[in-house]
Amino acid sequence: MRNRTAAVGPHRSRLQDTAVNTTHSGPHAARRADDATPDRIRRIRVSSVRLPLDTPVSDAKVLTGRQRPMTEVALLFAEIETENGHEGIGFGYSKRAGGPGQLAHAREVAPELIGEDPSDIGRLWTKLVWAGASVGRSGLATQAIAAFDVALWDLKAKRAGLPLAKLLGAHRDSVRCYNTSGGFLHTPVEELLDNASASLANGIGGIKIKVGHPEHKEDLRRLTAVREELGDDVPLMADANQQWDRPTARRMGRALEDFGLVWLEEPLDAYDSEGHAALAASLDTPVATGEMLASVAEHWELIRAGAADVIQPDAPRIGGITQFLRLAALAEHQHLQLAPHFAMEIHLHLAAAYPYEPWVEHFDWLEPLFNEGLEIGDGRMHVPFRPGLGITLSEQARQWTREECEITDRP
Image (cartoon, rainbow, N blue to C red; front, top):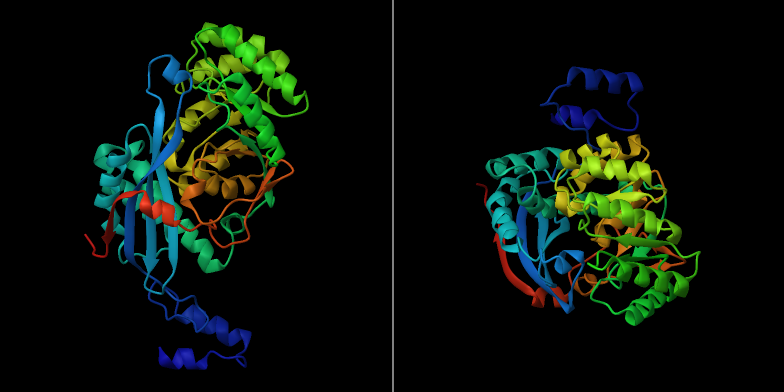
């Protein structure tokens, strides 16, 4: 081993290098002097953060009685540190319920990562999902491991000294963005208009408002007011949050055609791929859906059925960035538009790496959790120059931490 390492130098011939590589091929071959230094995961911190919302939030699911107004968001953070001092941060989330379950599952499987090479992200995702496979390979189980997967990608990009989008292979340095957090159903029309105008003044490019009132004329009234206030050129989206049946979705879809919507979102139950496909075929307005699905396999059912013109995956919900990239490849193959749901701090990078011009959703809810903000202007959200995701946890996030644990031992 010493002799081989000593022999490698600037005066070796190409033939000599070839001979050395051929002689010492195989899994136990000696490393060249310029090989990357191996690294191992030595410490993981998992924490549960409860983010309070200033105002209880209602969408169509609240008006139909299926859910209570949302008062907080439960965040699951994973911070990973290696023997060589590299660090990565990732997060997932849940709304209304599931936060404690995600934390419990994450704590159980986290020891599987200790001692592992952090670059082996695909293999580690598989290892984690099989560690908890008795409770399934989608839903809460994969949402819990999403925080680890995101942290590993963040760490890998930081080691490379690149923003995550650049590591993945960016197609653009900024992404069209639209605001959702100002357009919920609990918001009076006057405030809705003020929120929309403020978003546009702050450089956001489009506005999404919620629909799904029991009285359908109220949806039309609100949309009419927004369109008249903003004009015909501002991109406008509408989101029914799965609360229409098929006949209602057909009637409302036809009624909304005149508004020139960028898309009509979740008009039907998230798992009704046939209904979405029939609706998409009957409307000029593009149909968007996918945010509530919890695996690549579930999204594939939508894609295969032709149920969406715009696919809206959520990386934390489907298991992290590794799974998102698999899904993005399927969506690209079908020439679908992409508009990831929520978590803009993650999805900005993933959308920037998608071949077709995407959208990213602006939510201001998570901004207090991070020391860094995202630059927005001229209707676009800009990929930060900082390595990795480009975020660090704020002191406020530490104050909102309900529970945390540190893992340093193998299982």
